[in-house]
Length: 128
Image (cartoon, rainbow, N blue to C red; front, side, top):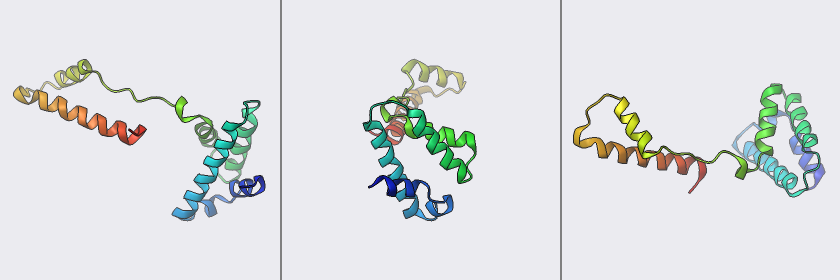
């Protein structure tokens, strides 16, 4: 997509960009395209891109602090975002012990269930 078209989409009024599911997805895809283009360029002045995004979001009525947070989020490469950190077996045992409930023979089932839930959350948040 040309720069003019891309910036046209980014300058689109908030109500228009968020009008329906298709508009939101298209807007998100254009932002992702811009992020990919910015990441492909050598890092010279990332603050210019961030400032441009913040100004456009504020112009559309988004709070200045929220706009900065969004710009920073999209500018952060996925690899740099926090990795999943699960509970250790010891932490799980301590948590169960803190509950002061006598699980008896069910303790191992509770730990297995906890591990299954943790795996689902990890998959949902970070992918496989």
